[in-house]
Image 1 (tube, helix red, strand yellow):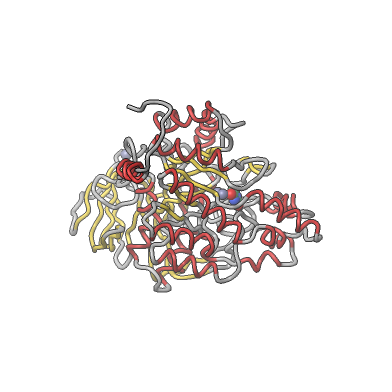
Image 2 (cartoon, protein in one colour):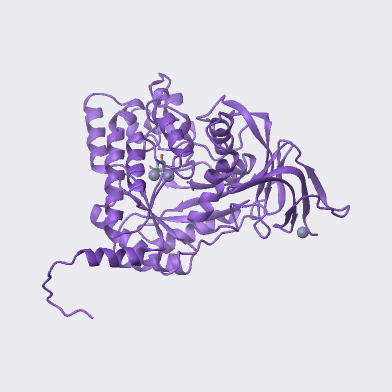
Length: 488
Ligand code: DUC
Ligand code: ZN
Ligand code: ZN
Ligand code: ZN
């Protein structure tokens, strides 16, 4: 049968414009957006009067079923996505982790894990070592496998961390492929030193996590990555911006015209580090993620940066471990698996903190939760918009209804929630994924295997304007030079 839905009378919101209109969907695609659409009797009609009809959220940063710190994140591609859909997120981009440095093997493994998907998804690829094979495989990822972004870890010494030399190689390669370079920006050598210091001081609890890797280390690595990207002249995407220190480096670079994208995550926008000092280990350990959640003040500064456009889009770094897994580090904070939840809470918490509080417009909400991500990863307007021809990934948000976060009712598989008890106004009442109602009246109707892999194309031969900038750079080197080889 064909799936036909008419959403009537809501305020349709795109990042650029909002208007009261009807939205008609057929077989997974938005067919029409205009007023007074009339349909036959067999069409499902949803009344959205007084509510917002918006593009489904796109979470640019998740880790489902990831092997990490001796265990595996507890949400897989089905449970994590079920949680996402219940919270109004209809697509996410997860990070493929290569297997022993083998990108293709990592990709295959993630495509396999994602077979149980219930919504659309895409992939970034982490680069954890460097050799000629990795470099060649990056070409395959971009040209054949639909990946246009690569993440480099400046932290996690001894496992994922790469040196500046390799980061430079990676930046050059990304540039040549028209792919986006992403960084986890913390100084991994200094983090290792900070951890040693804490253990020597006898600080073994979760608070040692925050104390061992202060904001200055995030600021330093962010500045270094930005400068290296400037030197190579390629765009840079800084994931999970958690501190004022990192945010200010991004602000400075953007002001100077450099293409730097900053992604705050919900935990950094909403929480502060006070929980890490909680005497109960189970409570404190659930807040351990990297970079750490910062002191009160950083959260508000990141909100301000998001509302003024210094930071562009909101992710979650959804990376869940249950309390049994977190307890691996009960004697030593270095063994607490890093990660917090958020894929289900992101839309509600951003709406409540930014829009309901008056810090952000409804159109900007759509931009930071959906449209900007689709544009950055080159899948707009298939995703991130309510336009004729766009995918029918749509939410209906009632600004007068309330949400409440509770482990007892959340859809993630984990047994804790870092946003436990939070309430506010603005509730996602309906989620439509691929043209089907999957969340309505507080009930999920999701089907494993129905999600699709969304390929993300590279940015043409080169990023807009880069060739010109390279030419200008070369022209600026107009000093006499000696060459050992003739150049063409
Ligand atoms: N940080 C986390 O908290 N978890 C996953 C990886 C990361 O960088
Ligand atoms: Zn059908
Ligand atoms: Zn990271
Ligand atoms: Zn992450």
